[in-house]
Length: 232
Image 1 (tube, rainbow, N blue to C red):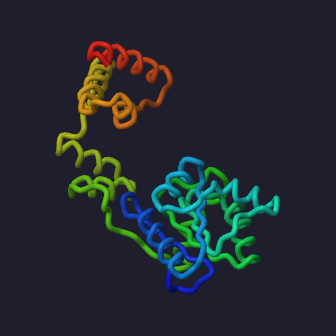
Image 2: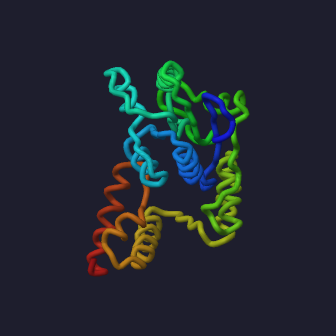
Image 3: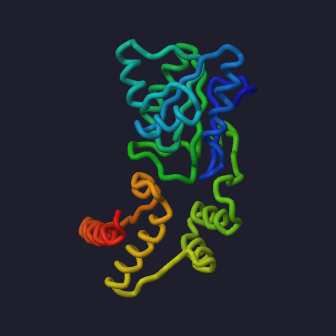
């Protein structure tokens, strides 16, 4: 990324592989050389997270394109595109064309095993292959070997193997009936949430997910009832 001298470079990294830390190091290196760095991502939340973690000014991809169209693009020497694997090819084409015209180097980073873009595209795996992109392979987020193995299996599409690994280590509960499902989920949520004294921490650190809205309503009602019992 720093020494290649290419107008466009790409990197591919799975969950926990340090993509944001790499972007922070890239920013530090470029700024040490007197270059200004700007970052974009696919959503406002992702852009804000990139800005906080990599310590650089950011916007959404859509925001940068709007600024370019209005002739108000921020000054930069290097553009970092985060979550590039989820960006539509038309948006990427527009940004890369603009960057080539104004002499801005582009550094893209994403996960080729992640969900593709909602818009037309999902060309990032081909871009990584064509440009011989940097590959980040070590999972530094999960500290236990079986957790890292489960994440790797999920990336490879081996859902059954990943769930089996979690089950072997007591991290998977199966409910056979609706009442059992509700009881297990709410009791598990309450047990984990009780670890946090701050109500905000309880709300942000522990969650129950469901596919259907009626299930969400049912679980929320039961969780609120349990929270009142716990004095929260």
